Length: 189
Image 1 (tube, rainbow, N blue to C red):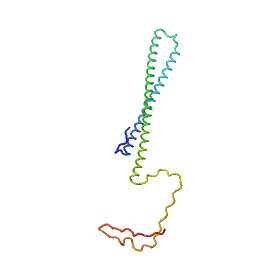
Image 2 (cartoon, rainbow, N blue to C red):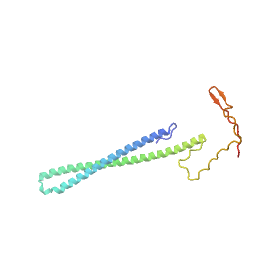
Image 3 (cartoon, rainbow, N blue to C red):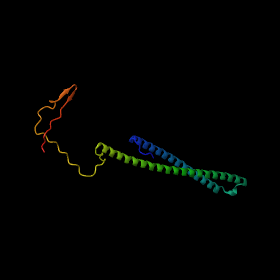
Image 4 (cartoon, rainbow, N blue to C red):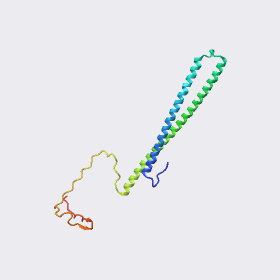
């Protein structure tokens, strides 16, 4: 698998992951189709064997003529050989389907490993970003089960009411308005 490189973004990783999932789904569809074909061939072979058994048991070899019997035996031998070939093909296809399934399982395992690695890197990146910006890391989606923090007290009103309008000391420059910061107020404690 590729390793993390500078310049890769979460979007490119998501695109790669989406492509891998799409490929896995395609392989699954192919495997289902091949398994269906193998099952149909196995059923066909079973039916042919049953037909041959009925023909051999139901005709009675004593009623046939010698020329008829040898011709019938050749036909049956050819049918049996064809059925055996189909059985071998079905067995080979079944083995191929099983091998593909194993590869698919291995690929899904690698996908899960990549997902796990991406999640670890995302967490590390979030922690790194939180450390660089000095901010606390984002809170988990589910808060821990504990008492909520106490409410924040409301600010106390100033001792003396403000009698001047806020814009009285403002200086006007061209199209902008500059407002001086408010004077420091004393607060009750």
